[in-house]
Length: 197
Image (cartoon, helix red, strand yellow):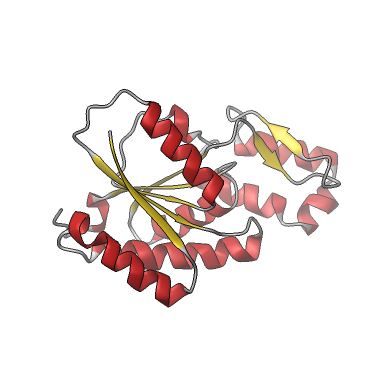
């Protein structure tokens, strides 16, 4: 795969609820000119609530704007203080609503997941699809904790990785070497598998 322009590779960033980690990286990569989309793999969208056992749960069809307004009604002080309103405000400027990876029919060259459970869900989904087997997707996992600070650090790491992958003249043959180099740089374990679909 020979690449000259960033927009040639299709990239997806995936976390559980398509709220924090995937959207931070989506925003960051989008500003750098990459062709990027973001997704979640959960059955529902979960946002922190007034206590750990009382999360705010939404369907993937609910827009970021509707979530923002709902939390503004519930407790504007709490959700401003914990950064959720700021996050939703950023999200609604990027796209209307969260999207589920399993519902997308698009094909991507590189998919980066933000936790191992999400990586496993993507593998299960792709393996369960009807295959044409003419498209290779590199699925890569970097564990990123689901908090605002880690999401920001994660976005920088993902951008560094994507930049390294873009620089490759032969991604399919060089990906393992690139990932080894990246793993040493960031000192975090990286999972990788090539999936055909």
